[in-house]
Image 1 (spheres, rainbow, N blue to C red):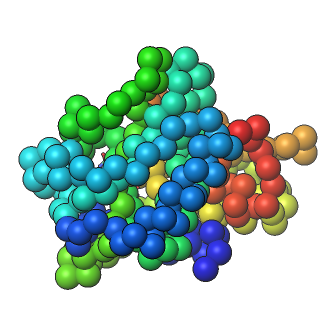
Image 2: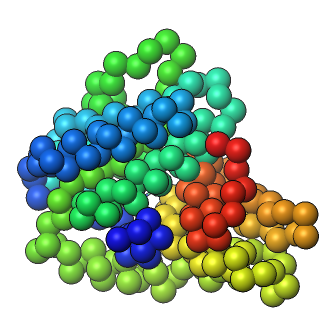
Amino acid sequence: MTLLEASEIRISRRAYIPELICQEKKASLQKIIDGLCERSGLNIRLMENGEECFGLIKSYGMFSGVKSYFALSGKADDPFLHEKVGYFGEELVLEATRLGLGTCWVAGSYDKSATALDLADGETLSCVISVGEIKERENLKEKVLSGIIKTKRKSPAQMSKNFDIAPDWFKKGMECVANAPSARNTQLIVFEYTPNGVISENTGTWTSNKVDHGIAQYHFELGSGQKITSY
Ligand SMILES: Cc1cc2nc3c(=O)[nH]c(=O)nc-3n(C[C@H](O)[C@H](O)[C@H](O)COP(=O)(O)O)c2cc1C
């Protein structure tokens, strides 16, 4: 499975088999994480105290069986910290999808203080991503939920400016953007085609919209094959 194919099948998963990820997949994830940290300058950790952060009340009953999650942090004074977290974190999400694991980006519905992360001076936690083997029995609920969300998704044209006059590669990029996860499925990132290049604009105001921006940029590059960021 390619990363592009992974982006087409990925949906957020919130029900997991309450077991740790097997050693083989953990080793693969660690290798991917090491590569991403080197490229991005971010600090990404695979954590295994998910029960403490994703309990019934702490996750508002939305998550079950979470044992593992990725914690994505970086330098608090980096003006593009959250965008970078979105960009490199989404590559990690798609790599995990390729390994057959379920994931869900989480900005709000977990207990941040229970992560007990040993953050360095000037380092801040941006977001976490739950990860694990999917619990099939509760899959149906997820699929129904995701089906409802998907029907509410914006089309590539609705997230673009100058879509009609744009070349095929731009349209392919936007198809991939339309599949991207976003906080509360708000899909607030707009891409404009101009003869001089592509401009992406974050029309949201929350910190998690900055993460959405990085995720959408990653999807655009994956679908279009064109580099638009300097990360
Ligand atoms: C930055 C970010 C933060 C999110 N935070 C949460 C969260 O706190 N709780 C949750 O259940 N889902 C969260 N989500 C998942 C979104 O609800 C989900 O991506 C969106 O509804 C689209 O559905 P899909 O991922 O299945 O395509 C978050 C997603 C993103 C990108």
